[in-house]
Image (cartoon, rainbow, N blue to C red; front, side):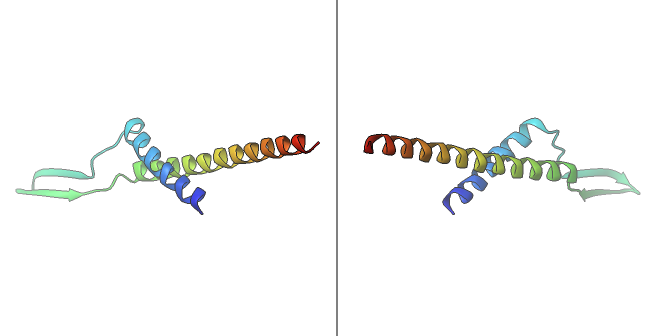
Length: 88
């Protein structure tokens, strides 16, 4: 539980930072001036950025979880090897 929560949290933080740095973020506000004599503000969302960022966050979260699991497994194997070696 702790490992999955921290993996998701770490993926969210690292993924959002990397997505703002690496991807071309377009602001969600777009203005159209003097359209039919009226100033208009149109709200738009950059769906490509949101989709790519969510994929990056999910990928980084999975990567953190897998690396963490691998390190724990190696640590357990080393402990078991040392324990078995000490018993003989």
